[in-house]
Image (cartoon, rainbow, N blue to C red; front, side, top):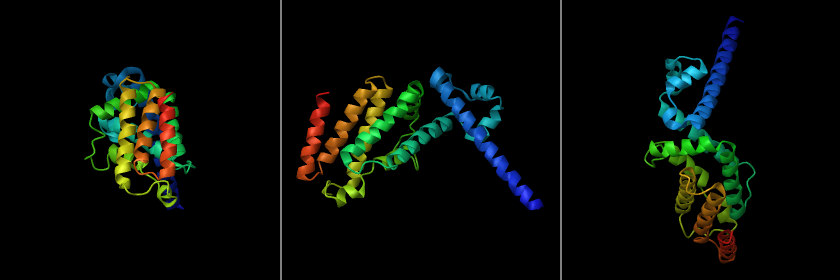
Length: 221
């Protein structure tokens, strides 16, 4: 019975730690959105969260670690949406995925702009970082095997090349939006056009026609 009580106590402590950690992360999001990355400090976060600065360091590490975790959480969330009953058709799949990204960005525009730009400036998307944000984002962009099995994509171009091109299309769109060069509607159009061009390079003749029609439609919007 005593061991059982200790086990339950450990579970409760871990659950409380997880809740406290999430509460502080949520607070970090609000501070970054309101103050920008320059105004966001560990000391300020600790003060607002009513914990000590060493507690923040113990829970998260440094300021850059917090930013990396927040952006990583976003990518993981997007990856979860991408595999949650997505359309099989590549065209509709891309629209589904980009639509979900834009919906997320609309929920907290100021935070996502700052966080994405900060992650880029800090080099957190560098492709050579082991287990970095680049690798996570690439997994979200990978082509599905069903597209090849159904003959929509032919496999004449390596899937890894398609994945890299789709990833770069998403990244450039995010950067242009975060930099204020385009709005979310323009981002959607730009990203989809580039993704459809990548798919068209390996599409069957029939599906190539559909992709070209989609590209023309986006270009006229």
